[in-house]
Image (cartoon, rainbow, N blue to C red; front, side):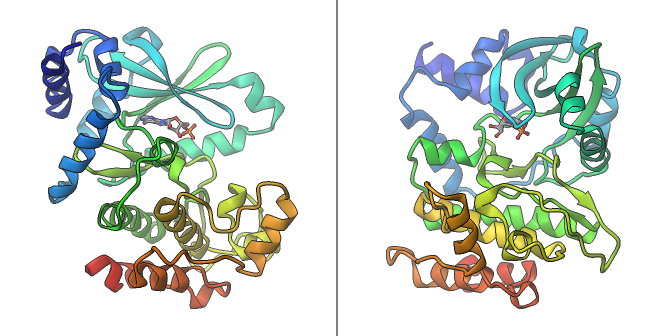
Length: 328
Ligand code: AMP
């Protein structure tokens, strides 16, 4: 594909002008341009100069439009990613031509791991959410052996992939992403939803610099003031209260956010011990990590105020938004 053709397709995608996009492989080219990664990097860098615009995006209308969608309404493209219990595919709606992501889970695997309740919760929670920094849920359908969840598509994939491509995020860009994740968390916590799996893989990136939170597979709705005891989440991002088997609440998400900020700024998770899980547990429990001196003093201060063992002394989401690293 020539650079010009690529640019036209990219603009059509950006403007949601689906009629100009003929094939799924053209969408693929947005995600995996034949041009070097510099092209993607440029898109990101261009986005940085701009104020992040909040696409009110698809909201309720589109949710209604796609609520009766089934597999036969979709053209299926390549695999976008792998979750713990399934894959996510690139798909396009045959009549509207809108490009979306389809999460596919095998019923056999769900049954084997007794995940029925968890999937039911994921669908119930995600389908009730509507926020500019949360991936829009469209619908769920099933066939004989699979469950499908149809979602808004994020063309630049997840933030973990950025880390993998060694695209170094400068602190200005990172802070723009973090503000949006914090706003998504404020929305969730106000609704008494705890995400419980905040990590770079679950933050998806759009062409205009918008980021959106996804994967509500571990999310739980609690009563105000209620504490949870079940240990769930991803090892490197677990809070000390979870690691130590104590009860916990929404402040566990703030800890994981602190871990994610550290990782995105340095390329390495703060408590990870690649050889021993036990050592990682111990590092988390003892809050044993070092702050590289190449981080700005403001960012070091923010991380230190978030990665606080005692959950009630941890910086709040409002405190993060008011911190000097965020407000500049
Ligand atoms: P999940 O099963 O939700 O954890 O998704 C697994 C991976 O698939 C993620 O880490 C992303 O790389 C990719 N992915 C999931 N949802 C989307 C989406 N809506 N748009 C683009 N990529 C996605």
